[in-house]
Length: 291
Image 1: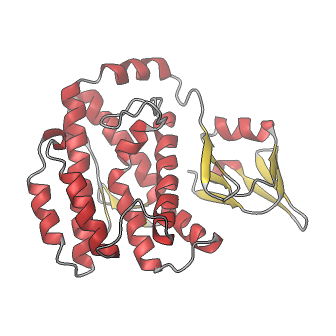
Image 2: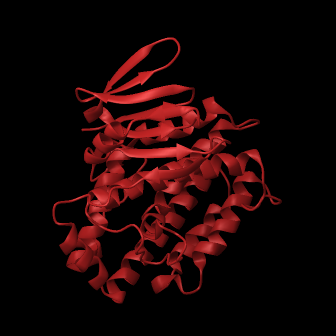
């Protein structure tokens, strides 16, 4: 089982040798067993990497994220084929009915708003009551946009009445960074299961290569929100980014068993595909924070 998230922040040369990723810098050589790696984040543009290593990371379904000169995620390595039966998975995905996609999306939205409400209640913020009402009134496909209304109430309760997600500030930088890590983890799982990231359930932006990942990740955004609030940020630099990356190692509950977030994403994603393929939303498995 892969579990390590590797962040390369300084000048280095990355190579493949005998099932290990080798990291060379001015001071030392580090070797990391590839079967243990879940994700590699290359945060510096002063990194060189061999095609042999990229090929091996792709074979082992390791997600590789490349950052720009501002050290923000800008692209990632996505395999063409994540499963031996990708062709039939693609056909299944195209044939998912509108009805089951709507039912699954409705469940995802309901779970997201429910988790936002739980988060506010834990922090003693009375706005959780309004979000509980929204959960009760979510219609199929969220026709009345309870998700959008809930988001405004939720973020204003957490960060103040003047806060908007469009502002350029430290809080939004942290949220965006954390969400991009979660999005990449979902893209990895979708490809690993043999499906296309481009075809979403609700998200349908022609310029978004990750519409399906954008759909599935919604209930997991709250994990990043919790961490950002706890960090009480006045700066957002490498140490703060590493704390957000480490959210993937947080222990949560799924199917009455404790697991880390990365493995929980895998279980949850598979349950979504089961629900879509068998027309049964009862097969969906959501996580919980506590037993």
